Length: 547
View 1 (cartoon, rainbow, N blue to C red):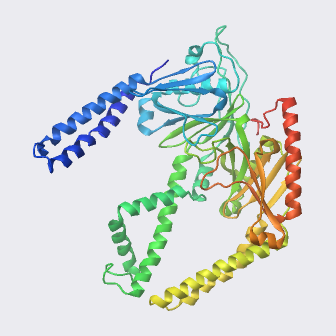
View 2: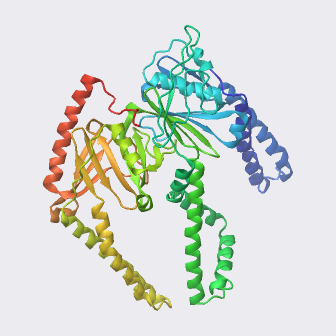
View 3: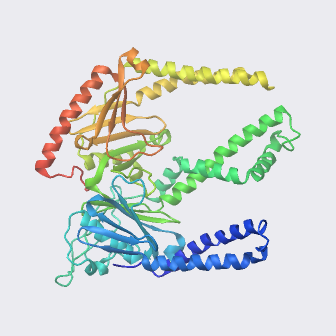
């Protein structure tokens, strides 16, 4: 069994020390006002003792934390009072992530997290090991998840890649291939290792996000995390933010302060606040996306995808090809305007934008390249999409009309209790109803192929998902009251991949009931056929050579 890097003892000591110093602080503060024998003057000594006790506990925790690689499992043992031992089978491991902050990169340290199928959180986290040890663990666990037999785990310690992604093995290559395809096979081996010493698998570069594409991706992507960050800032600095917004609105007729304004000045303040909120959120989103996907690189090692990304915090992880559940092509109106798109993969229990790390295979590239990547990755034939019946568009027209009517009614109700006079201007939203219904309708489609089901939906973020039949877990037909009256239904296709707040289950929306039942029957039959064929061929179903 191995221990963490010695610097982890310092981190654990500080962490538990700062945690435990608050216990005597609150205890002495509470008792000083009720118990005469307790004096508030004890506070410095009590908090110092609490910190020392917590720091000692952290050091003991470091010495009690052990991990090791066995032929069948990755083992972790931890705990001071309550001892906990975990044995993680390699077949359940989905991903091994390496994360480095700025300070950790300077010190040559890293955090290793291990994700398993079906887990919404990390199964094991190694806080602060050396970068070479992190690379060694990632490499060895990847070999074992791929079914490679290794007799002596320690003999691969010298095979760890360098920090820039190159390998100590002269046979491995990770050179930047020429554009535009950005693909190249690893060069043939020119040297050999001593006999009996294993070599690290060569890495093939599949994709690299260049500076132009990174900038375009940052400018055309809105991150929900940016909205949360701006809301967090406003919550903790409300007075400062409000004073700033009042100052910005004054040149346009805003109030001198929040207490002496009139209706018109408050209206100006509201408009200025909304504009500034949108601009600030957008700028935060651009900066966040740029820092997250800086120097993004995707490669192949054996049967795994491997990726690296990040500016301030560097991530490195792997995506086992055999664990991939589906592939999704994404784009938004701005990206479609410049003919760009992105490619995402989902694995069981480890979905896109999950907390453990991104599953983006290609954050952004030319749409033609992305579609070619998806076709080569899944071997799916070029889909000929079928659209929902025209009655579905009428349904969206009615739905959006009702929403617009509610907006106008809300403006009218607001005018009854406020000085708002031109409430009728809210009726402009009715003009957006027909194009909104049409755009939703034309971006829906599905394709029932020989080996794959392809589903397209969404306008603001259009998603085209390719699902092999053998990856389908359940197919359910759903019909609301209105759908039953119109004779249509929605078909929900679920896989073993996890879902997040911003990624829904692939759904074929508002098709004829008989078509939905036909797709349901076809999917069930082809699922059984695909499972039998895979059992005979022992095929993983996805190809990592998708360039």
